[in-house]
Structures are given as C-alpha cells and as structure tokens.
Length: 114
Image (cartoon, one colour):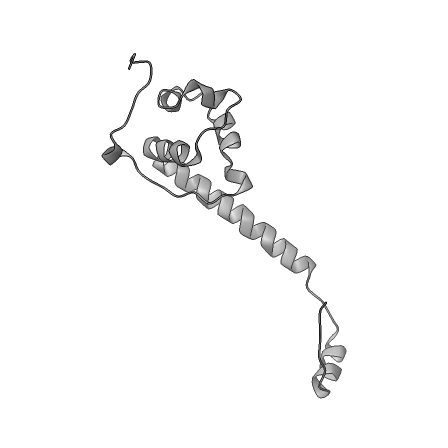
C-alpha cells in the first residue's frame, strides 16, 4: 500500500511445485538470494530475517522472476539426489566371484532378510 513492495497479478505468476529436498529448502534459498533486489522487492522483509518464507509463495515468485534459474536448480538437485542414491545402492551391493555364482545357480536356495 505504501509502494515499498511490488506485486504480481495472480494470472502473471508462473506457478511451480518444488519437491521438498534439503537442497531446495526455503532457508537456504533465501540466504542465497539475500542480495537480489528484484526478488526482495516482491517478498516481505521478514523473510530475510529470522522468519521463514512461505514455501509456495517464495518459489512461485522466484519462478516468475527467474524461470530458467529455477529449472537449473531443480535439475541440479535431482542430479545430486540420484547420484547419492546410486552411491548408496553401490554400497549395499554384494559382490561375489563367478565360481560362487555358478555353485549357487546349481542348487536352489532361499534368502531371507530380517
């Protein structure tokens, strides 16, 4: 009302649903974007202090202002997440010599986890 902040019409907002990943936490993103005056002009000042921004509102505004940047963030976070999952999967893989595979293939066996 005092013309200190800017607003978008609801029809001009590029809505987006951002997955809840640690890499994409609102606190981390707010800290990263702290010096961006364009973004700050659309967000309440409290968001850059101790109060956490509303996730949906924050990412919708960010996506409206910088859609390519948000897409790169999502791609990077997904790439990191799948890379970590693959590493964890490799750590849980059981490796065995071909002789053991041949022996086990000849006899029926059952495996049971607790």
